[in-house]
Image 1: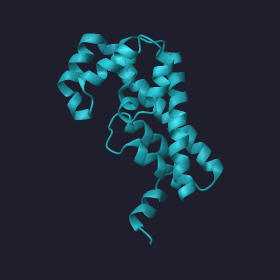
Image 2: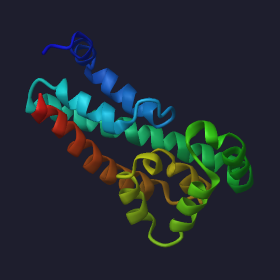
Image 3: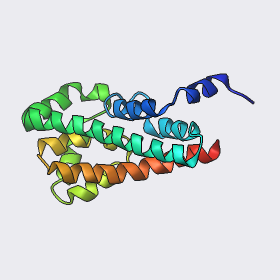
Length: 163
């Protein structure tokens, strides 16, 4: 059974769109990555194309995390927490989740960042408290890349092999 909507959506998933979708998904979680990434994998024409999609999706995810990190870094702890309390509900970010992420960073930040990339809501917002806490940026981005790669490769590969 052919679904024209799905076919059309897959045809417009070029490499630029892969980067932009994964970047925007970090800020506006309208289409969750566990839906978007298999579709990106389904649109790959070869294993080489799939590999480029992995890299661009990871780069988009890192750039999105960097945006949240910088927002937290610039705003500081008090203003960021007030922002989360007042507007977090619109982005599915509760103060309790924000506080849990911030508290967890005081232990093993590299592991928490990498593992957090595997949890749908956490992966979107964990960079905000990382910026507030001024975690070392290069270590944070490296950990984000590691965790994002696991998530992205797993989900895009599912889409690729189902196609």
